[in-house]
Each structure stands twice: as C-alpha cells, then as structure tokens.
Image (cartoon, rainbow over all chains, first blue to last red; front, side, top):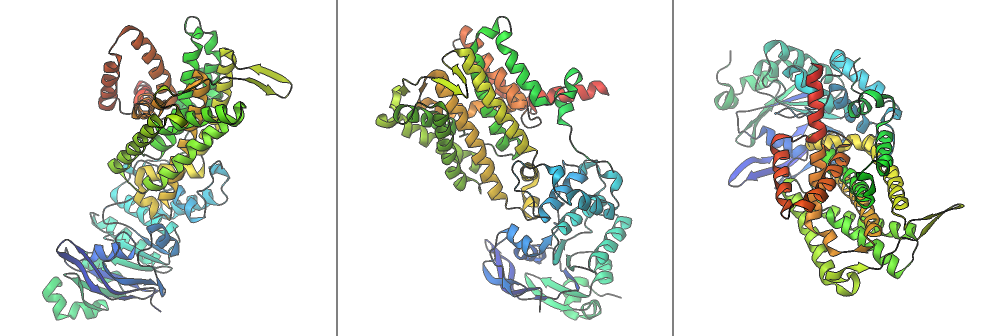
Amino acid sequence: MAIIRTENVTKGFGGLIAVNRVSVDIHPEQLTSIIGPNGAGKSTFFNIITGFFKPDEGRIFFRDEDITGLPIHQIVRKGISRSFQILNIFEESTVWDNVWVAVQGSLGYGKELLGRVEKLAGVEEETSRIIAEMGLEYEGGSQVKYLSYGEKRLLEIALALTTRPKILLLDEPMSGLPADERRRISAYIKQIAQAVTVVVVEHDMDVVMAISDRILVMYEGRILASGTPAEVRQDVRVQEAYLGAMP
Amino acid sequence: MIKSQSTAKQRAFPGLFRSIHPLAVMVIIFAAFPAIPLIGRFLSLGTEVVIWSLFALGFNILLGYTGLTSFGHGAYFGIGAYGAAIAFLRLSHSLWLCLLIGTLVGGLFAALVGLIVANKRGIYFSLLTIAFSQMFFFIAFRWDEFTGGETGLTGIDRQTLKLVNLAVNLRNPIAYYYFVLAVFALCAVIIWRIVHSPFGRVLRAIKENELRAKYLGYNTEAYKWAAFTISGLFAALGGSLYTFLINSAYAFGLEWVQSGNVVMMTLLGGGTVSFFGPVVGAAIFITCRDLLSAYFEHWLLFYGLLFVIVILYVPTGILGAAAKLRKKHKG
C-alpha cells in the first residue's frame, strides 16, 4: 500500500498550470527524490500534499485515507511533516525553545491555560535528547539566528521530526549549504530514512543519486519519468529535458 | 546544557527587588499609591490607572504574545461597562453579580467576533476588529431604550461589600481603589500564569512563525480565537469596574478611540518585550492625559506625536529601551 497516493492532482495560478494531473504513489520505507528544472512544479506538489495549497482538481490519499483539503494541523497529526525551501523555524527564539514547543505539541500538550511548563512530563527529557542528537547541545541557549546555515537546516528537519511523522517531505534541504554541510545533512537524511519514509525535492544531482531509492522527474507540471537512479540517469527524455548527457 | 528559561523576575526589577516576585512588586507599588504625597490624593485617577492596566495586561495576551493587533478591543471594554450597568439597573445591586455579568457579556461578544476574525491576518484582521467595534458603538449610541443612547446609563451606585464578617463601604474612594487593586492583582496572576503556560508558549510560537506552528500540528486559529476571547474577557472586566468608578456607562466607551488608547498604552510601555509594559504604559498614558488636558486644549496633538515617536524611535517601548540601555551599560 502506498503511503501517499495522488490522483490527477492539478493546481494552477492564473493562466499557469503549475501541477498538471499528477498521479503518483509514494512507497513506504523508500527514499524518494523529486527532481526537475526550476518551475517544474516540485515545490507546488509538496505544498499540495502538505495542505499549504488546496488542489484545483484531484485527490490526495494518505494510507488510503482521503486527506484532500484538510487543514495543515490535521495533516500533520495524521503523520505528514515537512521542511521548506526557505528556512522555516523560530528565528528569534533559542534552539531549546524551538525544540521545546515542537516536543510539547507532539506529546499532546499546549492547551493547558494555567499549567506550568516545567511540569509537563517528558518534554524536557525529549527536548534534551533531540538537541543532543543534532549535536547542538552547546547551542541550546543560543538564539537560532546565530547558528550557521547548516545548523539551522538541521534544526528545521529536527522540528519536522518531532511531530513523529510517518512521512517526511524535505524541500531542497541542501540549498545554500557548503560542501561539508551538505555531507552532514545528507548523512542525517539517510539516517532518518531508516525509520521514516522520506521524500526529497533537490537540485544537487550528486546527493540525489547517492541517497535515493527512487526518483520522480517532474517537467512542466507533469511526471516525466520515474525509476531507480540508474534508470532515470539513462532515460533519454530526462536527459533531454533536465540532466543533459550524463557520463 | 544551556537552557533559556527566561528569568523575567530579574529582567523586570533589578537590584533590591530581585528576590521578590515582580507581580508582588507591582502590586506593592500600586498599594502605596494613596500614601504618595501630592498625587496620592487623586484616587479616581489612580483607580482609572489600575483599571486600564488590567485592560492593557489582558490585551497584551493578544498583541504582545500572539502578535495580533486588534483596534477594536475598546468595544469589549464598553460592552462590559454596559453589561454591568444594565445588570445593576435591571437585575441586581450585587457588585459581584454585576461584574460577572459585564465580564461574561463582553467576553461572549469577543468570542463571537473572534470566530470570524481568527483566521484573518495582518491588515484584514485589524480592519475587521475596527469594523465590529464601530458597529457595536453605533448600536449602543442609537439604541436609546436599552443603552440610554447619547446620555448613557446613570444612577449606578457602589454598594457596601460584605466579605464574611467584614463590611466594606465601596462608596469610599480609597476602599474602591483597593477593591479594584485586589481584582487587578488576582487577574495579573492569572494573566502571568497564562502567558507562561504551555498555552502561552504556543501563542508566542504563533507570533513568531504561525506557519511553522501549524506544521508542528497546532490548530493556530483555535489558539488565536482563545487569545482574542480571553483578552476580551479582561477588557470587559475592566469596563465593568470602570462603570462602578464613574457610576455610569456611555456609548463612547465602545468607540475606536478607546481601542487605540489600549494599543498605545501597550506599545508605549513595552508590551511587546515585557509582561509589565502595558502597566507602565497605562500609568504614563492616563497620568499624562490628565496633566496635559488640564493645561492644553489640544492635548491630543501631543498624543499623536508621542505615538509617532514611539513607533519610529522606540518600537520596543519604555521597558524595551530601558532593557537595551541596561544591557549597553553592562557592556
């Protein structure tokens, strides 16, 4: 059973059809990458799956349950989480507070109007664990805006993971990162993919080819091809439209 | 690990008061007010300051902690005032009951408006709050039979309050001042607890990045509605207390000017960076209003200028600027 299934999903903005009748199955326990040139509709497709946009047409299913048009928080609670192309974290807060508020929600807290934060069972321990796992234990009290870009990316992925997703969608996680940070993040993504289904939109072909089990190629709002990295690399249509001749 | 548990206690009152909870310091300062030479005899002014401090503290749950700028909360202050007045004139002379009815009626209106505006953002949110407040104002202004229209409702009287074996004559301005201060102190504790609770943490997350808060699984619209309603309840309680201060209720209490005043107080004092900002803002605003209006016919001109200066040069308000200075001084 596919973890995510879309049927003829279409989304337009004015006269532009950004996503055009896309039907795909995302299989669990696979790391799937979506590639394609700028404007191919990759991020819009992500935004539709995660509830940021409602599709004009088509349906989205999560484990065979129709989730089309559900509000974002309900989609997240079902087990779909994401990161963004442009960093989306609590920039003015500390690392500790970023993770705390995420963990608090994941453990079902947040409605306690007069409760004490220090009395929430398990939140402090879980927050500490996640920060340590990211290797940011010495940055816990630092404001996020003072972290390196790579650390912020790491934090964003960690925030997305605190919701305990069944599937994690990462929108250009390598964007703007230097080579050493790319290695760190791609290793982290591979580690996550051991436990969670991961879908990545990414332009860095070295990373995509190295980490993916399956690749979907989007072009002008449609799915142009799909397959293993080797299959996609050899696909003539993909080479013409996006990759060019690859060695 | 370095955590960031904020020590608001230390930030708010350095030095001598460091070991005392800042809420207690605030209440002690207010409690000492009647004993202060010269200004202490202006008890009505002092009571007004405490009432507006309560209104502004509650309002700051919405503005300072959730990041939503309502220009219509004066309406709930005014509806609370009318609710208490109508309850007194038509139902019961019990102060407790009148305050309860005024608060609940104002809070109910806030809850209903909140349902409509909670999913709106930015300018659309602010404009809708003004629109509702003006609508309520015109209804109150025109509905003579119920609200007294232009002349308002008069004849409200503060009765003797019976507390176990103690009878307190609230007609005495000092007694009413301390009664209002006691209500304020209780509300300040509740508001403190709210903004420092798990719920308050979510509000701050929404203020900083609502989209991320949604993607953490929080139903942000429900939280914004709750913040709107809670702040409306405190506004209405403030209005109810105000009715018993001036022994009347007027439609002008609902006007957009009142809504603008509470925004100004909150920003002036530094509500966006400090829990106590609204109280400082309310104290300065009300006191200056009385002083300026005594000497200058066009005193509102100064207020407009003050608003411009605060927005342009001290956007974090007085307490924000003070904190910056202190930080700079410490090096």
